[in-house]
Length: 263
Image 1 (tube, rainbow, N blue to C red):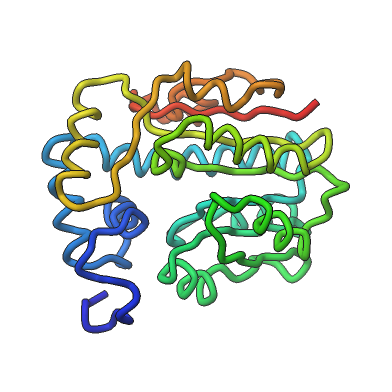
Image 2: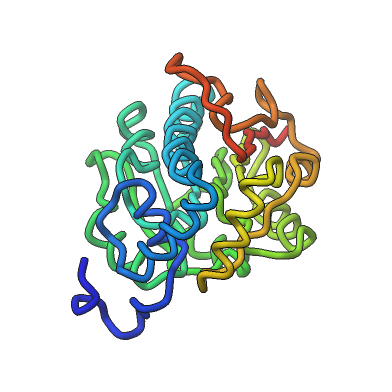
C-alpha cells in the first residue's frame, strides 16, 4: 500500500500498531512510517518478528482447540487487528462450519479491510465486525449480541492488545465485564508481551521513541490476574510458543498466554 492510497483520517505518516504488526508478519497493508518504526524496533529486538509469527500460530492452535475439543461455536475476537492469514473465522469454520465470529477493532483501516476480507468461510456460519474500542465493553457486548447468543458459550479473545492500556486494573475491569456477560462454559483467551528479557524491554522503549503508541510489558504474574475465577486449560499460563505446540520445535518468546474456562 502506498501513502497516496490512504484516506487522510488513517494518518499514514504516523506509525500504527496494527499496521506495524502486519509488517512484521509479512503483510502488505502498511505504510512507510510503519515500516520505519517496525525496523527500528526490530533492530533492538529482532525477536519481534518471531513474536508476530508465533502469535498467529498460537491463535490457530487455541481456536482449533476451542472449536474442536471444547466444542465452542461462538467467538468474540476483541482487538483483531488487520486481517492476515488463518484468521479466527477461517480456523473455526474449517472445523465447525456453523461457527459465529464477531471481530472488534477501532481502527478505520482495520474496518475497511475487515469489510473486504473478513468474509465467512462457510455459508452456515456468521462472520461480522463491530467498530468499537475495547475500553467500551458495554458497547462491544451490545453490538456483539446482535450476532451471538449469550445463553450459549462464547470464546472471548484478547490477543496481544492489552499492552496499550497502561493500567492493569483497567484491563482486569474490561475482561471481567465481558466475562461476566457470557455464560458458564465460556472461555477467555488472553496473551500479551512480557518483561521477561532486557531485549524486549529495550524493544518496547524503541517503539515509543520511534513515535509508536507505548506498549506496556508486564510480568507473567500480572497477566495471570486476568484469569482469576477461571479454570486454566492445560498447560496453563505459559510462553505462547509452548502452549500445546504442533511439534515444530519450541522457540522461546517473551509473550505469555493461556485459556481459562468460566465454571
